[in-house]
Amino acid sequence: MKSHFIITVMSSLLLGSMSLFAAPYSVDVSHSSVGFKVKHMMISTVSGNFSGFSGSYDLNKGVLKSLSGTVKTSTINTGILKRDDHLRSADFFDIATYPEMTFAMTSHKGKKVIGNLSMHGITKVVTMDIDMGGEVIDPNGNKRSGFVLSGKINRKDFGLNWSKALESGGVVVGDEVKLIVEIEGIED
Image (cartoon, rainbow, N blue to C red; front, side, top):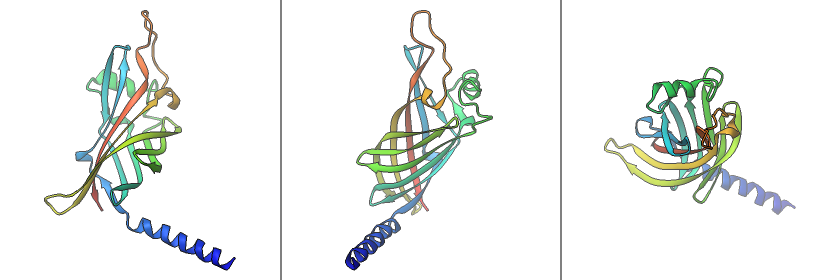
């Protein structure tokens, strides 16, 4: 009984100390992007991004240990002001009610990152592929690291339901949204 207690305590200390070796990073927004792609009228793809975002993460020997980020929904940009204003409206992001989206990693398994994505007042578990870019020292002596997250969500799972049916079949806006998050961070 006593040896079981000692093993439990030692295991807890070992696991706890592993997180001490993780390096904290802040997302460098000038070298990062949060983007998306969605089908338009079932024949083409519209790309967009968000310019207002922030985040942080921890790495331990090149392995992501934690990740969290916030995106300001008002900063959506598809290159067409009229479309962007529609995306900001209650038909889509409803930025007056839901000014932010958030992501918080819950686990990392191989080349997959699992986490909670909160958008439009709804939180869902999403899985994203991760491609680690590595770590370097920049010309100013700062340690930097980078990675790309990519995945797909169904916008209707988050209450972004607006679309119109086309006479020829299909809809104006596709349900599947491809997410592409390119991150470069600076060690704190």
